[in-house]
Length: 541
View (tube, helix red, strand yellow):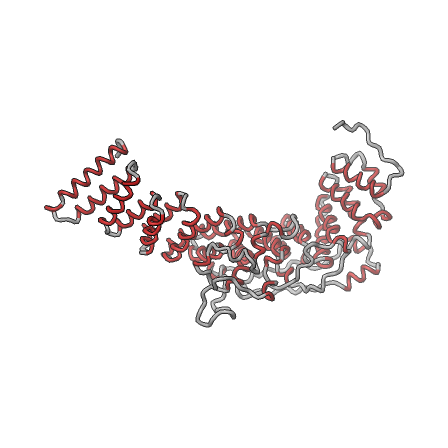
């Protein structure tokens, strides 16, 4: 490609082509060369028919460091009756005001978008929350990032906007997630900054008829009154379901159903069907992730992560037989959790990786505070999340941590179910066999012995399973049966020194329990296998 030495603008160039040409020049960091030309086309007359092209030009000016030039264009767009009703244009005006240091004007601009144009505008809420946080108003930022403000709005009250810039998320129905299944958020005092205020640009043109229509369509929002003590116990803060059974279950049966079920009317109230509310809730959790607000963070994070799956299963904790299954990713009300990366726009969506990182943060906080009972419940719900079950490394991480917590709590039955799921996929890894060895050592579950024996019978060439089964039999006092198993393993793997050492230990164990005059043969056998072990292993301790 040849170097461009000279670029001229023809006077007779049509305005749409000229605007695209200027946008390209600014994008290639040549904005200062055409700055005078941009000033000449940024007029009220051109805004009437080419406001979207001017919006693209102002956006490029913001990204290339020409914030003052972009601010001039954005103010013209905000004054025009046709473009001032488009939320993303007014949000751009607020962003440019922040770039130019006009923080108070930017606050008024963002609040105007939220209170008058589009209460569900993710960009405006996130920008306003970040700006309030930068200014030190943490409580006001948390109030702005309250998902209930989005999901409680009626679908028919949103003001109409031009169809050329329709919000891709506007088709999502508004709904309320108020439920006593999850604990409510901590009560936050409303800041004076959260009240509706019109931007200075709108104040200058308050006499227009369309402005009067905007004022007639103002929405009044009621804040949900919440009574939550900040000193509640963690178990109450992480309460993921009611103690009472659901309406669809039997009176005497509170266990989880074998397949998830939820009627269509209830499915529309799920959080995963509203990417905008999910993003706002996610940003609120990030804001709350601090040592002084860790309890509130756990409440909000668990509400975001597990509200949908608790609505589907309607129980306190999913049954062990449902863990790590793919039920929820196939034709279920929460199938959107399996394809989060394709929901909403790239700028506002919350990906599965984002929620997984949030899960890890919840695990870390509960571990650091030694809340093992609450951690067990959180891990049980995490084991049915589609974006966890669908990724092998996430599934393995949750399964191993859940098994470790279950060991600590003495829940052997749950450990067995988890180990069976792990054995199907991760039997080739050393981590699985180490975990199984820990289960045998710490758990008194007799089914572990039967599980190992069946595993050996199914795959006799699996040396790790065979050795662990022999060691388990020897630990439980069946030394003769252990010797028979080890002899069979030794015939298939004669080069493994560990087998000879275990045989020597078995015969030594038998000799200890024999009479002093009957130990001679067992001791000789023990010495013989120790000599063989020394020959195979070499000099060692």
